[in-house]
Length: 104
Image 1 (tube, helix red, strand yellow):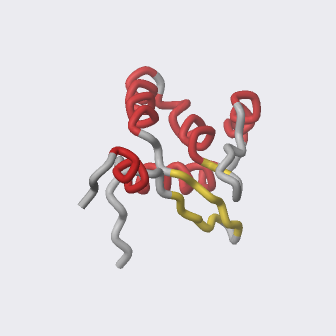
Image 2: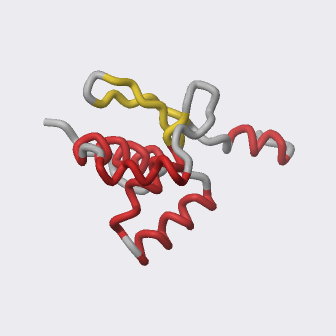
């Protein structure tokens, strides 16, 4: 049983996962409560920026630091849709915003 706020916060730490896209491993982190709220607002206002925003917030290096900043995120508009959508989909899934697709 959790007895302190610190114990609960340890349990509630953001999960990470490695996804493989085009034979490359990409480290992602789930969105925080605040991140989920921000994402909801972004989707309501302009869905064309949603995938790039997700990647800016959740694609991380081995130390947990974001790979993209605001400026480098702009380059994602010229990236492969297959790659961007695969990574964004994995971020949505780990964040509880998308049900995992069943593979037959």
